[in-house]
Length: 174
Ligand code: ADP
Ligand code: MG
Image (tube, rainbow, N blue to C red; front, side):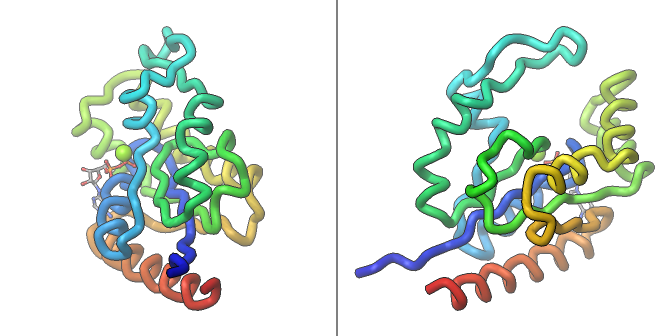
């Protein structure tokens, strides 16, 4: 029996915008497989040095790519990461950049325990739409979409719309 082709989706955006929340719900709804790149790196210790300024390990991007390549070529994966320009462009059929209003994001990151420069820099990253521009530079513009992610209704609508997109993609590609 020939297996159904399934799309790969990238969920990206500033920390705190809701990638993990959306990714897990979407995986339940669509049956696609959810992958959190931060967790994959942590599990495999796929790091290359330490960032003193932010007090966090630096991802070894090449090893992360090697680790995920086989699963990505199979298809049917939802990838969650706060960066997006080092993944191979061919991996993704669609890219969603989640966006959150500044005050809302500030509160979420405070609740997560972020303070000082780390808090300010992440909110600035959202204000300057850094990840959106990174995505627009790394992928074909027509596959990059921004999604508002401020309130529970946004989450519901995003799950609904992406689920419909997945169903349509599968009809078109099988
Ligand atoms: P990320 O994975 O992008 O860092 P999370 O999914 O961990 O973000 O979400 C950060 C916080 O924001 C969590 O407390 C989550 O419950 C909340 N959140 C996520 N999406 C929404 C939304 N659409 N409306 C309200 N709160 C949300
Ligand atoms: Mg997350």
